Image 1 (cartoon, rainbow, N blue to C red):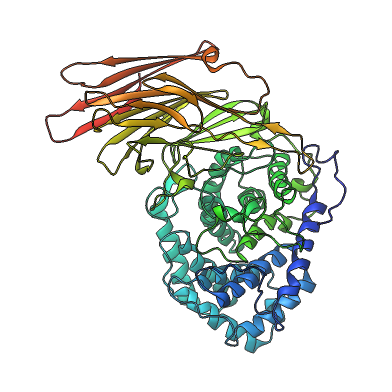
Image 2: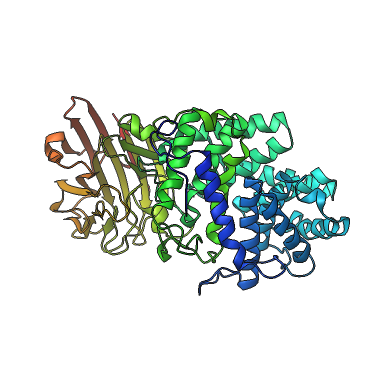
Length: 594
């Protein structure tokens, strides 16, 4: 991919300007054209992998997701090809939109693209083509979506069809129904769960906010835009902290192969005027993410986006991931809807949150604690409130970062009780200044109460194991050590992962873990110090923090522990883990600041 020379005056941190985004979009669009069928209705990219929806659906996905890129680019030559493909596709080439089928997802991309480019594409079609296209899209209005972000796909299709006068009653019903359904998943502070449960990830930005805000903006509905725009603005205050100093997004959640689609909500805030970020900060974060992936093999020698994170990588894929799936990254080019003279393109880049100062930031809605250090640009996410409906290491680990990825064996950032590393049924117990806590159950019936306290790059991790048999082995693992080679022209650096036992544990290996065993009594406390840093010569952990744990025994609090944390800076924090017998068959476990 050939990009313009960097512009250090306007973009002193990334060198990227609007011209770089335009060049990247043009290159991606040019690269996919040879893989279109003769009628341009389907795009079949090379590779042996098919999604579970099959080759025909995957070909539709290739059309829909690259059309979205052409729409953001306003490329009239490309849009003419997509107009031809639309005319062919709705003549019994594309699969029908049925309940919980992948074409429902792609119909939303097509409808959004048509709505954004109506004078350039839709209005130039023959009336017969428009009628057939509206009929094909119309099935999305009544198709049953999966109960998650899919509820917004009929909303997006309905918004377009209503704007053209097609099926107005059915369109309005689909819009109202979808927007009403997502209300049950809004948990405050700009955060949604992606359906029932507590699945918090990037779908907040590239789906749960993107579709309602764009619908409100395109419909010119001030009340809706105030509602959904206000939520987006609140979300971006947290979201901006999820990017590392090198531009990397947090490596957490599913569908990570969409890569720089993570930038879509940043641009959306600027587009609609609902953002707490300055223009220079918005562009710095967005351009940083695009540059991060383009410089790390996201695009192969044919100019195609690969299925993976850097290069091809099956570990970040799901069953629905097909050859064209990465092109949801097209959402990252939303900023091209802003004209060249907009301040987001003309302002000088400003530092992102991780670059300005060290910070430990609580996110109350997902019950996360974000820990960032300006000296090495690393961001760490301490997860005490997010999980998927199934056991998934991209949701259930205690910690993630912008530079590491979950490992399987041994599992990183886990507590393993009696050989069981699974963390299911996560219950948030609170989050505050410098700390977060949660509880989870094990298949054996035991429970683990967990607390993290953080400052700078240092973490205190405490786990109270209750209900396990005496003698049960407990293993606490830390960050995976990762060596970064200078293979992309970047400065080589080595991450240091430390794990030091403090209470109830022995050993000193971060990934293989520190070990202990459950003792007699209702609960056993295990405490370790942890650190992930790229600083070359950090001080030993015991010189940065001291921890004292004391068991408290009384008639009402059998198995309670007091935990005191004293930092080298002089600040202190104190917590109490409590197991209270309420004269019933159950125990009540909690951890609170004191």
